[in-house]
Length: 301
Figure 1 (spheres, rainbow, N blue to C red):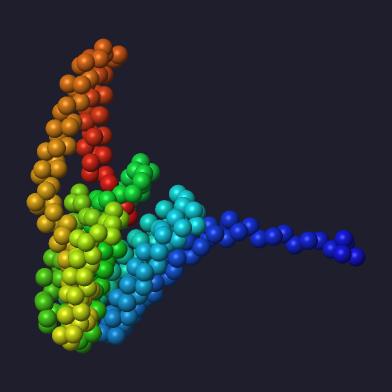
Figure 2 (spheres, rainbow, N blue to C red):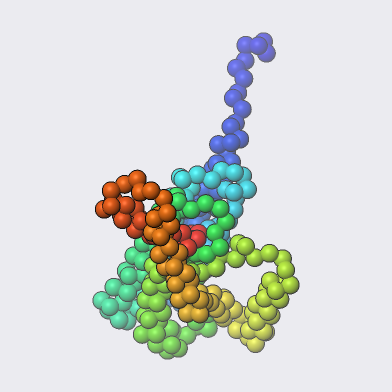
């Protein structure tokens, strides 16, 4: 009798593991959609606060989907594309609508344009990442441009800090400073300014000291009665760090890249040319561009 029964097929654990990181990504999408719904609803401080917190939850899920994929060895091009689509919704469209309904609506059409510029720059930044993701390999030490989750985190942390106190944004910092901040974040996303990933940071005394200092700053701010400002300070410091390093070391890095690129034609003259003169010049130019891109292309999403 037992032989007559059909055995149920065993579940394919590999397929189940493949779904796991994508569940984190889909959860991030739900957070973004929920934030959009709250922002599009009644314009109350409570709705704005909850919409901002929803983006933070999306940030949490986005931070772990890639780690889960690497842990379960289920990385795929599908996961990369889905993650980028989720980021456009949760960190591009949702913050753009939130910041418009929260503050920029007072600028009329200008506020709509500024919000649209932010969302568009976020999409461009993600498209560039997808292109580079197919050509780069290994642990990347830098992001190229401000990552969109951190740009969104900067905006929504400001919303949380101000709405937590029940004070309208226009009464605290004014509308135009917020508009300028949104445009600056949009520009940084599509810029070539490099931001550290900290993936290469090891457990050494310097790293531990920096970690303790960062935590101490947050504790001091929280103890002074403004815990909601802690995230504002952290996100702002990260944004400023990339700008500061670009100002101090960017010119030197670009000069080194140009020097390396200019050395390529000289090295090519040592060997007998295999192409006609015009074609050989084109190849040299392509090699120079590749060398410059290799220096600036160490990035992650």
